[in-house]
Structure formats: C-alpha cells, structure tokens
Length: 112
Image (cartoon, rainbow, N blue to C red; front, top):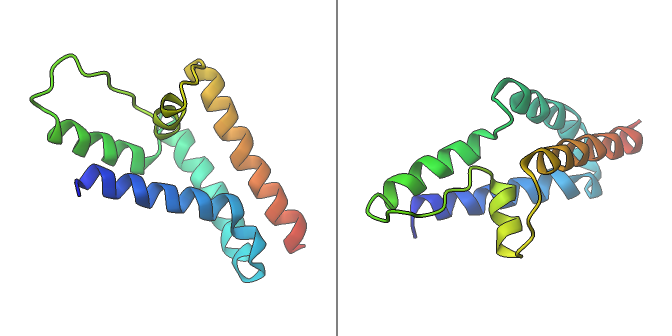
C-alpha cells in the first residue's frame, strides 16, 4: 500500500471520529478541545489540513512519472470527485467549516 493511501485512510478515520465521536460520551471532552484546534489549524494553514498536505506530498512523489495528471489539493475535493460532484472550492470550504462548527456545537451541547 502506498504512503498516500495509508494517510488517506488515517484521514478518513479521523474525520469519522470527529464527526461521530460525540456518540461515545467519554470522548466528548476530547472533542471539545480537538474540534476548535482543527478549525484553528485550518485558519492558520491557508484552509488546508496538515494530513491533506502530507497526502498530496506523498501522492506527488509516487506519481512523478504521470504527466498531465489532475491534482486535487483537498481531501474533501477528492471524495467529491469520486462521486462526480463538482462544486467550487469556496463552497467546499464553507461546507467544511460549517460542518466542523456544527460538530463542535453538538459536542458542546451534549457535554454541558
């Protein structure tokens, strides 16, 4: 398995945890800290996740010989392309930030 595929799978696991971890009551305090930290990381890192950047780096290295290959710089963008969904990058970023904030609110409401 390629390094970029491993990182992609880890990325998927983290996303599932951040979206649905609130179901497990013992995880809510951790998510109350983690979700704003992720949001902050996006804000200071030009709207890119560090795992996405790492995945793109390894993907680029693994596919150096493939010229004309379409490069998508977003994990979420790659997943949308798999389902043939085409939305603008600004709309995609708005969806991501709204979803992260919504997950935080769910955790906050259930924890308090």
